[in-house]
Image 1 (cartoon, rainbow, N blue to C red):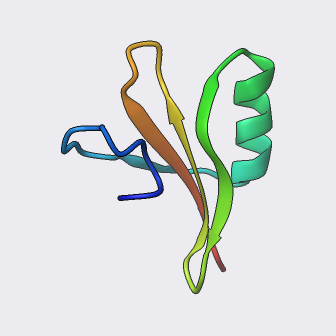
Image 2: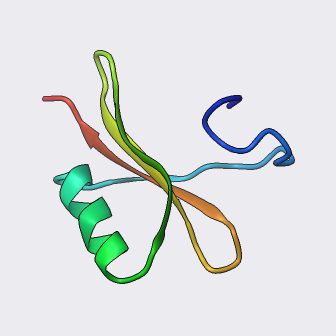
Length: 67
């Protein structure tokens, strides 16, 4: 996970939630003062992913799979 989450983070799980449009979801989260840790990025032959964090710092990822 180096380069995706801060280097000082301890080992952890990262849950992914599939959404229809990750870019639209990130925009909605930001409009509501949510914290996006990594803006949407493409994963070849898979789809598009973004990573956010809740108020406690726990990470959550959203994915829109390539169809």
